[in-house]
Image 1: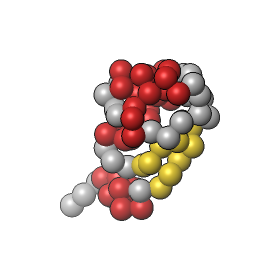
Image 2: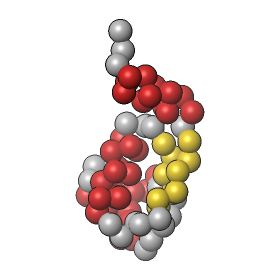
Image 3: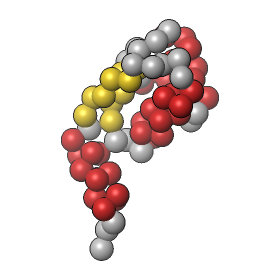
Image 4: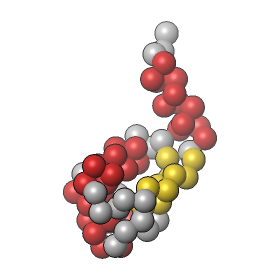
Length: 69
């Protein structure tokens, strides 16, 4: 039996929604985006300086080139 969290993740992965994150200069935001991206749960759009956002997401293990800025 799968947990509630796993069920939510499966549903999010199937829907693959686009979510806009307005605080692209905040490390907490960049870390969250990287984690969600690695888990393949969302298609993120992050508002902020292109270079800073992409470098930040890369720093947290995501793929900065795959993020719309």
